[in-house]
Length: 203
Image (cartoon, rainbow, N blue to C red):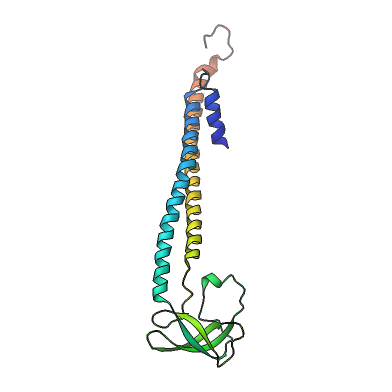
């Protein structure tokens, strides 16, 4: 890592008169960037995980209160896309049948629509589905295990984003240091360049 090499270079060159102020500044920028990445990024990741976990647990509790399992009666096999679009099961193999069903919501209202039922459900059979308080089709409530997994991913993303931002800030700062270094080099060359190599000059 370039930042680590700069720090090592600062230590080796600390007593060398050829070590310029810009060299020291570059090495110190690298040092503090490494410190902040090593200490700050994990801290931000941990805080992000805790915050996300608390928020997701609140969502889990809310879904448990607002979503209910009710009995539905299968009327016929369906060929159109189902009403039940569960994001958590979208990537899983679809082993359930799409049927037109009728059910009664928790509030007592009657509903019908196309849903996914368990494999092998035939017209006339009953099966369980998830609905909200108004009896509309809903996905299965999130589990605490899923909440923990999502929170961990959020924490990792926060830590990686923090580390990337710190590295980007270091690179921008180093670029400014390099620009100033080159500007001083140009000024020095303009001052001594015309006399470079001439006999009798004091430069």
